[in-house]
Image 1 (tube, rainbow, N blue to C red):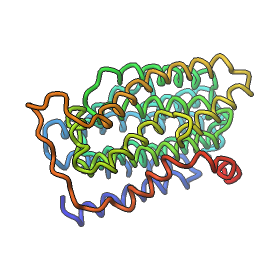
Image 2: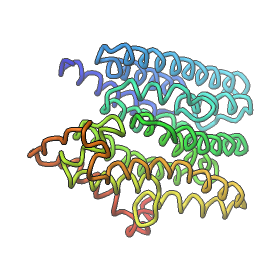
Image 3: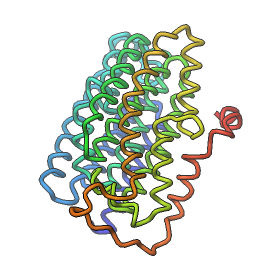
Length: 346
């Protein structure tokens, strides 16, 4: 892609995100979401591969439908209450439609079908943008409207997302699809707590974005897209592969690593809200996704290809590891000890 065109699209993405997260009026939020959708489409379809074109088409149709629902929800609220302010969304029907629209934007179950397909058809860098930056505006809208939302509906969506995100990722061999189901599962954790403690949702999102960025950038460096190529990628950059192993375990939420922090805080908050059953259920369902993280980690740690005849070892690259990856990896692995300080900031 032409560098000038890429710059325009990335700048438009930043602009759309900024407009949505800083707006008070529903029309401005909708405008930001539309700019975002239009700016990401060329980045998805830049390879001109039929799968990429299909991914861009699916993404456009889903996001257009979700944006129309956002507009419909805000107009219904304005019709009944005379309010266009985002924080004044009080009409029950509007809240229900908005929850559906945001679930569609994010890829929460049952509106999740587009996300793995779109991520599979996109390049790794675009997949990173789709999994992190593109999720920020819808989550911000949920954050601003959280006092009015229906807790029972969000809890149901969250538990279904965690269950299906873990369950459908079990038999995948394409890493981008596995990361898509991982994203759906993490969104379940964010959705369950948004009504009770919205700041925890934001903390979870920030840490999820950092961990996912680490994994996507590492995979982009080693040019790995499938489990079979992941098994032989260790020869390219052994130290980077070791850090990828830790980053995957962190994304799974295992205790000494950063990913354990949001899960621990969310379970604690749910218990305080007398939702011990929901906390137990979502914790057990996250074991499903733990299985495919461990599978990825196992493929990363394997140091000899199982079928030596079919695989050639890769040449080790002499390129130094990117500073961005080094910083993100450090955050992904070592943030748990400073949890008290993070909580005072949040």
